[in-house]
Amino acid sequence: MTLLVITYCLFYGVSILLTVFIGFFFQIKKESRYEIKSGFELDKISVIIPFRNEVHRLEGILKSIQQATVLPKEIIFVDDHSTDDGLNFIQKELKGYPVRIIRMPTGLEGKKRAIRFCQEQCQGEYLLTLDADVNFDENFFKNLESLERCDMYVRPAIMTANSFIEYLYEIDLALVNAVNVGLAGWKRPIMASGANLMYEAEVFKQVDSIQSHEQVASGDDMYSLKDFRENDKNVRLVSNLEHAIYTETPQSFSEFINQRLRWLGKTSDLKDNLSTTLAIVQSVLTLAFFVILIGSLLQLNYPVLFLLVGVKTVIDLLAFFPYLKRIKRLKTWLFIPLYEFFFPLYTLIIVVGIFFYKPKWKGRVVKHK
Image (tube, rainbow, N blue to C red; front, top):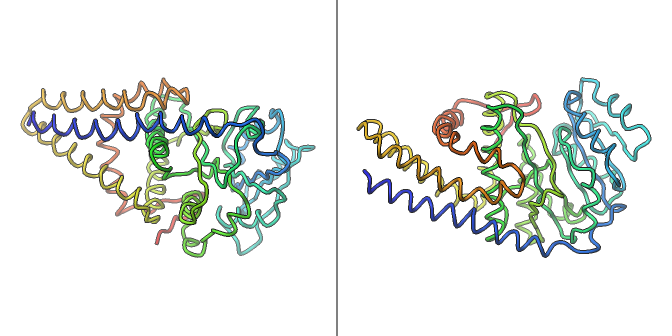
């Protein structure tokens, strides 16, 4: 059993350190070439913010817009058939700002259609999509002026915890983001967040394949990334906090599981060879971890159990440190040892949920192909 643990740890260590740790430094080198003196022009950027029944979450983004040192050409809020008072709240708080609010017509619904409906009315050459529940630094828009233009930028979306249990929710996404940054350093990103995604409007119109995934309620960000990639467009990732948005973690365990099942479902629809390969490797490593864990428990072999969890924890602490330091979430990094114990239960619930639970998004059931 000890030899099996050593073999597992060697394979796991090499895989995660190469992908995340080494890939991170490759990505930082790439990003250093994206910074120039004259980049995006703010008067050519339209910001699109879809919202639906989010009046209780709008305060952060409204304050961020109010405190911004400069603003883009236009900011458009798209009301996806809200039944709360969000529309009036936005109008009141942003009176006098370059902000428009448009309502989705009857017969159109969902974030995908909201973005496309809004794009037809945008004046900017570049589009920046944000979620309605985010906040950002006062120089968020200003920093675009020193970013070299390309077809698409996958930009950082960072969850921030406010309580002990929320750090376990936050770290799950932070580790996934770290893997995405590492993969971008080696090859390309496999994930994008519509909470902070920027692309050229005309290029989007050329490559958009919404007909193939219109029935899937969420996931426009991932499908758009796929469309740009499959059409050989210039897609870049930035991890610098100058370009980051922040959002709260799920507020309950059920909300957390619902979110992860929704993300997992849309990822499985994409048929990305790199993502599939990564998923296979992760599945093998996870299965091996469970086999060794259960075997050592059944044999009451606690030294092997502690060796397994201890070495894996050290590897994860080392591999993910550079990324979490870059995004200034070292307190989250300290939760990695606790996450090692949370991970088996969380994985089991996710596996069961895939077969028996239909995730919802903004009050609508998420459908997959």
